[in-house]
Length: 60
Ligand SMILES: [Zn+2]
Image (tube, rainbow, N blue to C red; front, side, top):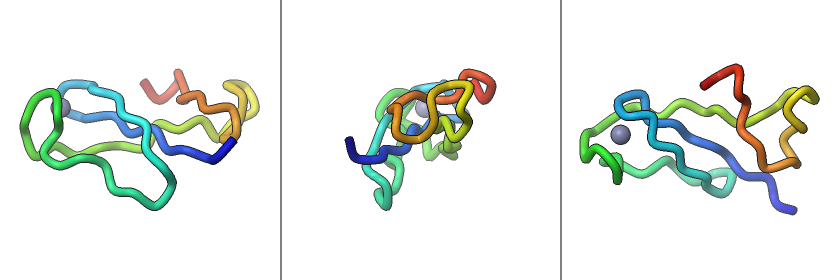
């Protein structure tokens, strides 16, 4: 499975998963604002690691 990045909109908490190397959508497709997206991808074994396709619940 390819590694993906989870991005979360800081404005409306919209979540989007994209391939590594791609930028998050702009403007945000949900709230239509030019929001900042934060990377909430799981990099810890507690949530499955980066190959799991999970986001990190502690970052939510
Ligand atoms: Zn948004």
